Figure 1 (cartoon, each protein chain N blue to C red):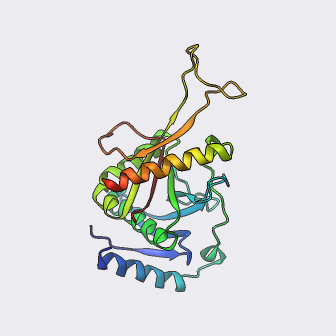
Figure 2 (tube, one colour):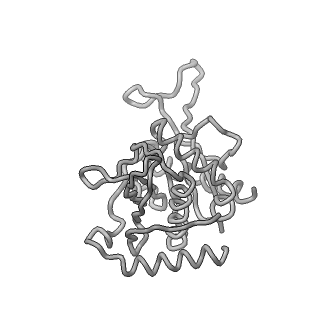
Length: 174
Length: 64
């Protein structure tokens, strides 16, 4: 896979990077990629990947929809950055939160379109949310009455074309 | 790893050393992300289960 980089700024610990991209109308965007530890300190070796243009507050708008002129280049740049990050932090597993349909579709497509690259350098994982079915045919619920979801990771199933995961993960292939 | 890819990573590392635009450029990884996975791991036991299942999935994925 040919990767041409048009980088603007890179943090020394690879916690973030910015690069330029162009949409189909020729408008240029500055995209920031950031890898941050999760809020949950029980998962110290899982970090969250976010990417997107910056909003008015200078934060990543990861729900922005940009019609990239070259989507493949954007995806390969993001994965390349992750490769560089994981080489420096090999104990980390990177997670992408597919908490809405737009993001989940984007991440799922990134995994499917880059299967060869991912399988060469990474181990890819998909995570679904499951809930236990009780004997009374209700589902297990928490104290507030909401379904008691539990995350279930599996080796990424590339045959799931339209069946999106809830959360996406990958780490460096050893 | 392909040498070409490693060379690019090395070039990016060099860029990182000289790419100091503002204080944000050298920000430490102390900004914690909001995510939908965190609320589902509520205690140490659930964390142990999730991490064990993650490791098992990784082992299966590595064999593919």
